[in-house]
Image (cartoon, rainbow, N blue to C red):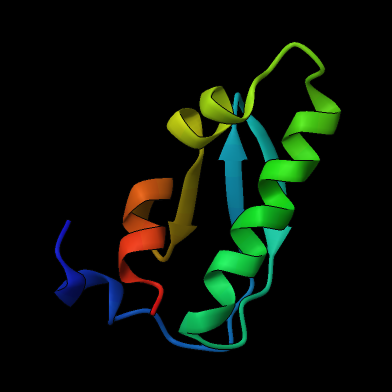
Length: 80
């Protein structure tokens, strides 16, 4: 996924972080909020799945943006 696709996200928005079929709602107000919201989602999943590691969550999480399913790496790379 290139930066081009990420820049098509309209802010502010309400969307979801998805990990192992569990949805966590995130509400980024602008692109720089994505990292804050991603950290909140990761913390939620670490508490919800006590056997999961941060690495597991970061590898398995997907963020839904109007049909785009972005990985954690794509969010981090394109958030700023």
